[in-house]
Image (tube, rainbow over all chains, first blue to last red; front, side):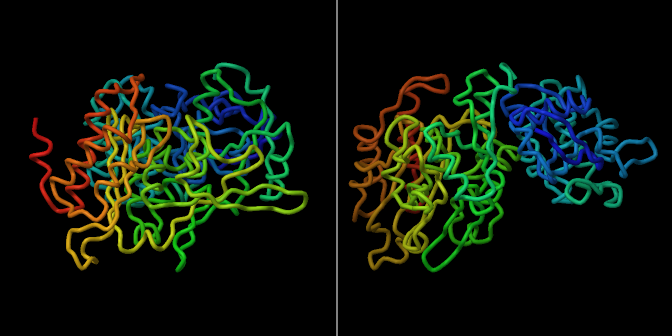
Amino acid sequence: MRLRLEVNGRRRSADVPPMKRLLDVLREDFALTGTKEGCGEGECGACAVLVDGALVNSCLVAACQAAGTKIRTVEGLADGNAGATGLHPIQQAFWERGGAQCGICTPGMLMAAAALLATNAKPTEFEIREALAGNLCRCTGYVKIVEAVAAAARAKPSQRRTGRDAG
Amino acid sequence: MRGDSSTFEVVRPRGLAEALAELADPDRPMPLAGGTDLFVLLNDGRAPARRYLDLTLLDELRGIESSSAGLRLGARTTYTDLRHSRAILRRAPILAEMAATIGAVAIQNRGTLGGSLGNASPASDPAPVLLALDATVELARREGRRVERRTLALSDFFTGYRATAARANELVTAVSIPASSLSGWRYAYRKVGARRAQAISKVVAAVGVSDPARSDRPRHPAAARIAFGSVAATTVRAGAAEGVLAGRRLDPAAAAEARAALVAHDIRPIDDLRSSADYRTLVAGRILVTLLADLGGFSAADLLAG
């Protein structure tokens, strides 16, 4: 099928099998390899992206189901939201607070955090932990990740525009 | 993904009649909604079908309708929809409580009620809650040019391990909860998994009791509806335990008798990769007395000791 959709604000299209995973479309057809494959069965969240603002595991979505949607991947997180370092405030907070170690879970963590902060500007620690509960990290013990999301939430709202509004 | 995704075909109907026409064909495709179960199989190289019927474009399967008759939940209602619906939070908050225990955000955004019921996993979390709510399932099929619908009690829907009373040409289109279940009853829910998120149930249960506060005999439930998952080949109504509680004062003695009846007659747990029969039996009984204690306003401490 001819798949047409918007990825990180750009119109894209590709000829793909309709049941190809969105994860593989992003990585193979659009060369967006920031989105990682961890478990391939919806357990780990490494492949999490936003589809029309909603967090999904891209290993569980058929390409055809993404037709006409607006996708945001980790590569698009900083687009229009970058600070002086070129990073999105959530990325900046992960960097400053040691929220990333090996890095495999980090793109999914960032997208889950972006989905949370798009609808909840002042999350409690419980809400942060619930929002990240589908994203597994085998390095950090989660404490620094939770602290990084809390720090990003404290950043100025104008620096945090993302998620649903930004598509 | 193990296997080649290019070998699969997808039909993407834009309306229900068109979708049902596909299911009327002997070479019918398999319905696909949120994909949270199907893609686990596909990624493992265990494709259950070659052709799929993607329901993404069927807006008529979406929406939560609240009326004097009760609640009607379209088959494509997601767990996120349940958590945020004002009608659910006001009239059936137990469904929102259940939805919050499914996977995590990304799964709740994709998984659907219709998909869960159609899969008929005995580990379904919505199924016991919907059974306690005395829900009905709406099935639609194509007869010539007409769309025919029928309604089944959910208690008659699960016929065996991952088997349902739906015919091959039928699609689950909605789940309804009667108004009679939404007032005068109180509900409690408990799921036990390996952790609080991203876990499939080892044991899951929902209990409803007719509201003691509305009775002229306080704390005497006229009826109880009890349902358990992950303890038998299907989600089950616990008829023996319900029988113990019918018309009884809801107190520790009744709860202890209900637990004994549950374990002896209502559940048939097995050993599998997630848990053991012994653990499930122990925990199912403890969940029941805990939920009954919550609903009856007494302490379960003595019943849980030892």
